[in-house]
Length: 186
Image (cartoon, rainbow, N blue to C red):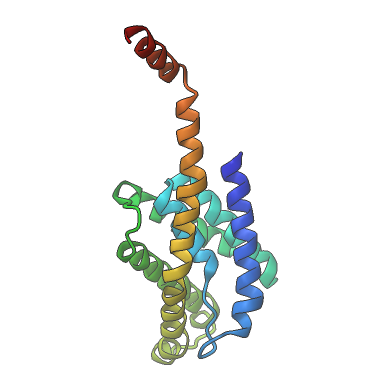
């Protein structure tokens, strides 16, 4: 329940920051995608299932906010969360290189999907112009912001979610029995 509450607050705060503060701080017309950072972090640090769930809700809030077809971003973000969840076995706390690589690849995939479904379908074949003016600034700005934002999410997961798991393991009957057996041995 605590994880659900934390992810909900995280998604809402990230969306509000992305749509207000970072919209005003756009660089070369690019706004960093904080929701992709949240999705990658949830999948990479937790599991495929949490990555999919967080990705779905991140995409759904983007679909609702953009006013486009409902479910397109939800599907893409859910797939990205699932993809990043496959690398959960390689998760190392405080590692920054691999998550940044996952964020850059995920942002590239979202930009490519946007190009295909918004421009290529209409016959706009200027991929090089689109890459220079939209892809590259958006990917670089997202990765630059992710250097700080991902570390904050990593710290949050470590402090709150992992501590709760340690507290629950302390209250398990096995740990109580071992404590009692230690007392009787002394």
